[in-house]
Length: 377
Ligand SMILES: *Cc1c(COP(=O)(O)O)cnc(C)c1O
Image (cartoon, rainbow, N blue to C red; front, side, top):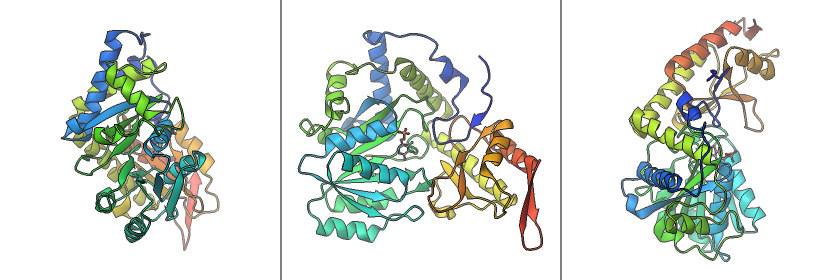
């Protein structure tokens, strides 16, 4: 199999191993017991990765990109007379609110802009005063900035007020240690092509059984009916309602085995954190400034300010890096000039060191009199 021309230093789709890609080189029947057993195995493994109390949770796999799974949760778990509160501090929190608006769900947003953590006092007061709110949705790692939101504290407030807790852990699950039962998460959402290191094609929801059982009458869509999808998977030994992405599912199974071989989430999280630390230390030496204070920064993806120089051109920088074998990512913060570098996927400390050497080689930039300058080679 040919090597990839470059590493994807992006938050997903990301760099996968050769063996994950190879797992897709066969055609599979969805009707077959072998396939359904594989699906059941995946569902079980995901619950076990999420918590030490697996008996309380059940996994639903859902076709589509991660957003389809978010939409399935929002559209199925909130009853017709329910109300959603969304904590927004970036594009993915905003997207949850957009989904709820599109589905005509009664929704309140606590918007903090794009670079600040959620306002916990306001969350507490809002839940105190607005008794109509039934559900609260939060993004764990806000991939816009790589900010890791403080979900322990958020969960405490949500549960003090007895509301349902929906967690978009799309870009963190598998790369950051957590126990969703201890965190009292009712629905966790993630997808195949993030920290589990599979390829894109489906998402998954790890749902508290006691809660999803109550959701049979809520769905606002047929194909994104999370309850029906769950019921059919539960009662038909892993059967999907509609055509499933069989190749992607096989690749995902392989990716789960490789996660186990790595030593589980604890060791993967360590590798990502090391990638991130190496990256930031190296970039600082090259005079690049990270966007976030260290305390807010996740090990998943890191934004940097553009160098303060009139000749800096992100597109040129991007294509230089791509020629050298590294695909980096544009920024997503609206009013600031930033770019991002992902730390996740089949990427290791030596890759990060090679990236840093390439940046140094292709754009030497130093500090002049009062001014930074940059030269492309
Ligand atoms: C990747 C991601 C999603 C889903 O995006 P898709 O493009 O639909 O896969 C949702 N939330 C967060 C935080 C993400 O990082």
